[in-house]
Each structure stands twice: as C-alpha cells, then as structure tokens.
Length: 442
Ligand SMILES: Nc1ncnc2c1ncn2[C@@H]1O[C@H](COP(=O)(O)OP(=O)(O)O)[C@@H](O)[C@H]1O
Ligand SMILES: N[C@@H](CC(=O)OP(=O)(O)O)C(=O)O
Image (cartoon, rainbow, N blue to C red):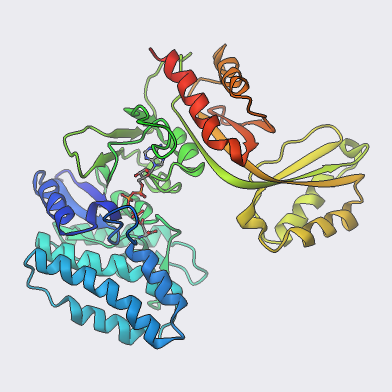
C-alpha cells in the first residue's frame, strides 16, 4: 500500500484566501498528503475573531433571532470572501442557509459551534478537488458523549479504501443517531490524530503558525529556541500544562501505532518543525531541559489534622467529597499530618464554599485554609530528574528573581517538575527558568 500522510491545518493556516493558497501549495507538493483535516478559519490579525468564537456568540444569542442573524452574517461574509477570492464555483450560501434553518430545530451548542469546521472543509475540498467526507459519518460518538474509538477507526479505514484523497472537518463527530458532538477547544488536533491512526498513516502533520514546538510559549519568552525532537510523553506534559500548539489529547490515538507527529509552519513550509516520536536516543544525563509550560489560576485547599497519617480512609473520604462535587484535582501534595488539594479555579467555580463545608463536617480537620491565585509551571525533560545540578539551576534562577515557590511536585513519570508560584510571578518565573537553561545549552 502506498504511504499516506495526514495533514491537519489549524485556524491560523486557513484564516483567509491567501492562507488557503499556501495550504494548496503545501498539499500539492507531496502526493502522499491524502487526507486533510481543517479547523475553522482563525484570526487574520491580532484583534480579529475566530469563526468558532463567533459561533459560540451565535449560540448565546439564539433566543434573539435578530442578533443571531447579525452575528451569523459576519461568518457568512468570511466564507463568501474566501470563495470569491479563490474564484470557486461553490454555492456556499446554500450551505449557510441550511445551517440557519437547522439551528432553530436543533439548538445544540455542539451542532452550532461545529459548523465552522463543516463549512471550511466544504470550501477546502472544492478548492483542492478532493472528496468532502463529513466528520459526522466517520468520527463516532456514543450516546453519553464519549468517543467510540474502535468504530471511528474502522470507519476511517473504510473511508481510506473508498477515497484516495479526502478532506474531513476537524473538531466534531456524531452519534449513530446523527447528534453532533464536539471535542474540547482546539480539538481538531485530536481529530487529525484519529484520522492518521484510522487510515494507517506513516506521518501526522500538524500545520500551524509557528515553526514547531518552542521551548517556551513565544507570548511569554522572546523568541524561544525551537525543539527539534520530543517524545510523546514530554509533549503530553507540555501541552497539558498549557503549550497550546497541540491539543493535550492529540498524542493518544497515534501513540500505540507510533505514528510520528510533525508540527510545521504553513507560513514557512521549508522549516523542519518539530518531530514528536515515541522515543529516541538522547543523553542519559542531559545538560538542559526540553521545555517549559504553565497555567495560571489555581486554588490550594490546605487541610491539617493531628495524626492524619493514622486515620484510615482519610484520603479516600476527602477524594469522595471532591468526586461527589464533580471536580478534577490537579495535584495532591501531602505531609504527615497535612494534605493539600490544588484545583483549577474553573473546576471550583461556585463550588468552593460547599466543598469546604463538607470537608469540615465529614472530616473534622484541625484547620482548612484556602489560598487562591496560584500558577503552576511545568519544567519538562527526559532524564533531568536524575541529573545532578538541574534542580539547583532551576531553583537558583527563581531565587535570583525573588520568586516565592509555594509548591514543588515531581511527576511520577520522572520527566517533569511542577512548581507552584503566585499568579503575578508567572511570566517572570518562566523567563527566569528559560534563560537559566538557555545558558547551560551553550
Ligand atoms: N511551547 C510553544 N511552542 C509553540 N507555540 C506555542 C507554545 N506555547 C504556546 N504556543 C502558541 O500556540 C500557537 C499555535 O496554536 P493554535 O493557536 O492552536 O494554532 P492553530 O490555529 O494553528 O491550531 C502559537 O501561535 C503560539 O502562540
Ligand atoms: N475551531 C476549534 C477547533 C480547533 O482545533 O481549532 P484550532 O486548530 O484553530 O486550534 C476551536 O477554535 O477550538
């Protein structure tokens, strides 16, 4: 069988007709690029609006028909402009009409916000002359909203036997009853990974607006160094901790089959980008780290109770309270008679008072304190934990910037150290650590 490359193009790569032209050149420059997964058009300039964000606004104004039509018109105009500038013989307005008519019968959020990818894939398929395959036919969800992985893989495989070249919209799929479901934001990366695995691709390309994964977020560090190669595991840690270039779950579908992921830049297609691999040889004791990422806005709930260590079931009861309130915990650092829960503010929204009350009544602790405004910074790298001097360099850099460390946690995978700091210190902490290791790399 001939080799297949799956190429996902993000919103920034398809923001306007000029970007579409770059995408066409890229796709046609390699015949192996057979299955293309587009996102919805992203921002054309800094203060522009992403189509998906406009669709969220449409959903919010659905009760007010006039407002809905007004916002939807901005979306329609973007697609019309793209089609006109590409001189496409495609009646995109009829697809928009179909959506407007369906919206009032089907008011589901998922249906509405998925239409950006749907329309964009129709336009891109027409422009490339590829078959349009609706993700609702091949990305299969169960009634409870979870992905039906096996069925999805089998449908995608069948699709690859049926069509040589196709465009499949990212971000959504549907249940067998045709109810559209979306992945979380940025989920087209995950769709691309599902397609790559389903069609037995030899490579999953993820085209974006940066020349690969950088050692730190370029919005925080000025021109960070680029990462040539990274393992799935390291990447998962960095993307989970906020390196938004690739969706945090995008590694899973291709992990078992070890299909490499390559991050590439649509605006600079000659750059090699970053190769994400299952594993590769690297120095056992590296001089430096692979990357830094982080997120703001966490709250710490610190609980103390004398002889907590001897009280059987204490942690189980504590975690049951958290589970019953449908909250995910980020970290659980513990001492002998103390334990802390680190939870994102988003998870805790409107639930904090209730959780604290339940901890007090059900666990009878000596104290429960709440500390808001914490940021988490992940410093990631294979082998760094066992390398002498790495943590000394890290904490010296923070000390030199007078940054107060509130929490330290070493992931059990031994490829990351997570550091809790004040929200307001986040940017300077990332810069301090980045430059400390940048010097070590010379
Ligand atoms: N470590 C990092 N390396 C590269 N880019 C990063 C990193 N952390 C955050 N980013 C941001 O991720 C952006 C690309 O992701 P995204 O906006 O989702 O692109 P797309 O629209 O192509 O899917 C970059 O423009 C950059 O600002
Ligand atoms: N358009 C969706 C899905 C997506 O993956 O977009 P992007 O590839 O532009 O991050 C979103 O904005 O969430």
